[in-house]
Image 1: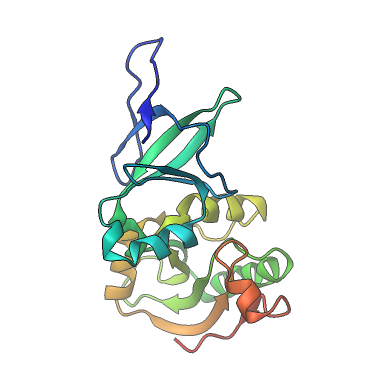
Image 2: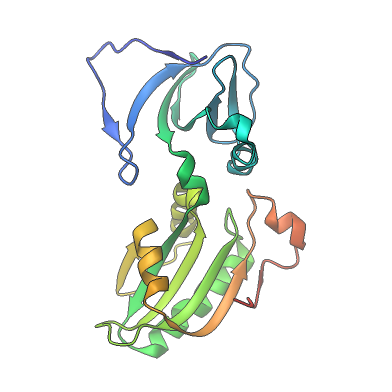
Length: 216
């Protein structure tokens, strides 16, 4: 079981902006299995360290794991302490997004094409649907929307920064915006399906298929 570490400088309570779960410092047992992923899972009688989002998702498919506590590693220290952010089970069933708005169709098309080229060169961490679409009645109606599993929010943000993507005059992001975008019934002019390096989908679909036209 995870144990809370000492707080020498008083209580440190910071919050995951979207889930509003406190960030805390904890110490995992020295004999805990360790992988390369960013998640820690507390089963109650044992702890798994370094699980991937895919592995956590598979655990949550079983009813016997309804009690587990899930954390994401925010910072790891040489002495074994870790700053962990609690993650809700529900987050593994949600869709997140980045939506890049333009006032004209030509600029939005250029954004879409640039993202496709970048993804072929450097694939994203997880599968993602990309839409080039129009939102009727919106002030900036032409958009590129990237829709992806919510548990990869940090990784997708880092990926977009890493490839230097600068699409859109305005940008929205977050689970609520993903739902709002789909509810607005966008007129989709073009689509891409991206496969990911961390969720196993790129390996499943072949390294030569970084992107492909999506059916939906």
